Image (cartoon, rainbow, N blue to C red; front, side):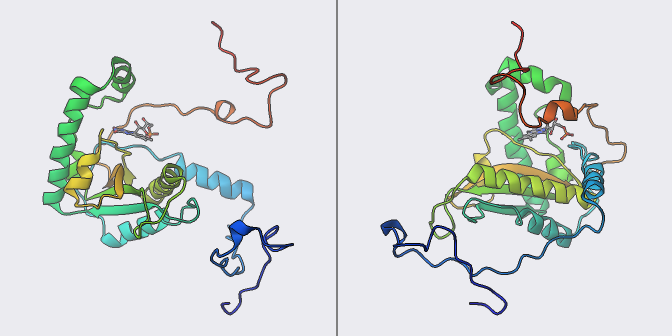
Length: 255
Ligand SMILES: Cc1cc2nc3c(=O)[nH]c(=O)nc-3n(C[C@H](O)[C@H](O)[C@H](O)COP(=O)(O)O)c2cc1C
C-alpha cells in the first residue's frame, strides 16, 4: 500500500465467504484521500460563472491561421483525458495534426466524402435540417486552422483488453476537450465527415482505433460570423422530479 493510503473494505465484497466469481480477481486499488476542488465562492456563483463562460461557446467555421502553441494543445488534451470512462479504460486517442501537408491531405479526403454526402448520401430531411447552418462540401478550415485534433475511439485497449461504454466515455472526453478549447480562448467545430474511416488510413492509425470526431482548433477569422441560433431554455431542457400523472404526461404531442 502507498504511503498515505488507507485500506477500505468494499461493501459486500469481503463479508462472508467469497463467491466463486471473485476468486482470482486482481486486488482492488489502494484508496487515497480525495482532494476536493474548492472554487472559493458559493456553488451557485461558481456554477453561474462557468455557465457564463460556456454560454459564449459557438461552433466556428471560419478560422484564422494564427498559430497556437503545441503546449496549449497539450493542456487541452490533458483536460480531455480527465474524463470518466467505463471501468477506467480511457478508450480514446487524440491525434493532433499541425503539419500543413497532412492537413491538406485530410481536407481533400474529407471534402471527397462530404461531396458524396451532400450529393448522394444525405436524405432530403437531413439536407433541410442542415440548410439553416449554410454548410456545404467545402471545408477550407481543415487547412487554415493551425491544429486539427482527430479523436479516435478505441474498440480494444492498446494491449487487447476489453473496453466498456466506449461511445459514452469518448463522448464525455470530447465534451471536456471542447470546453477546454473554449476556456483557452480558442474556437473549434465539432466536425463529423461521414464516413470518417479515411482518417484511420491517412493518419496511419491501428485497426483498434475508430475515428470519432474531427476538431479544427484555432482562432476565429477576422469578421467571423455564426448562425443566429437559440438554445433551448432551461424549462425545456430540465425536469425536476416528475410530472403529475402517468408516463409522458405533459409531453403529449397533439395529433
Ligand atoms: C456530434 C456532432 C456532429 C456535428 N457535425 C458537424 C459537421 O460535420 N459539420 C458542421 O459544420 N457542424 C457540425 N456540428 C456542429 C453543429 O451544427 C452545432 O453544434 C450546432 O449547430 C449548434 O451550434 P453551436 O455549437 O454554435 O452551439 C456537429 C455537432 C455535433 C454535436
